[in-house]
Image (cartoon, rainbow, N blue to C red):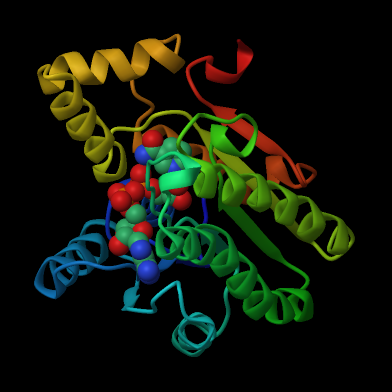
Length: 261
Ligand code: NAD
């Protein structure tokens, strides 16, 4: 599927799922604005590698997803560099695991800001240009935790349910504008975000990291295998293509059967 000539902003794309989506979108021909935290030398290496491997333009903006002004500046910078933003992927996210009574106030605020409010601010900033051009694709990376809950993930589950609500409203408000907005709901993907949960569980239970990973999958994901960032990248590319023109406001699971139970 070709995304040639389209420009994509992908938040949290210096690692994990966001980087997987950036690679698949660049492979399909889209210009990319990378965003996220990390070592600047590593990020520059990633930017140059994507550019030379796929022959597309790749820029980076270091907006902090907790800061609305940064988010607006990121979208403006993409509009200036590419002349437009056709695709917005709201992907940046963090996790924290603790029971509600022990959940730190600061972690709650950061998770709601990065996993939910940032998607609102980026969508708000990108929509006027999309509406003026009559074309836009917004892909929100929610989670199975936008549909069902797990213990000890109050902020994450609340934010991801919110993202699915935001997806539906964005879709309805723009249903006749040539703009679609859909949410992808992955199960467990082996990224740094999940590796930390595996490591913590291994330490807590006194088991190996391999056993901890099997334990985690066995609890929730019937396929007993991790979803890959490539599979999610392909789904995001599909949602941007013409075949998905009438998919709007959907929450699409890629979860190895998690939510079928
Ligand atoms: P990750 O930790 O590999 O990547 C997170 C990205 O977000 C990184 O690029 C990081 O730099 C960026 N980020 C974090 N805080 C930021 C901030 N304040 N400002 C800007 N960027 C920031 O994690 P991942 O697993 O790739 O997660 C990506 C998204 O996928 C998240 O929204 C997550 O909730 C969602 N998700 C992950 C899984 C999974 O199993 N890994 C499952 C379902 C949904």
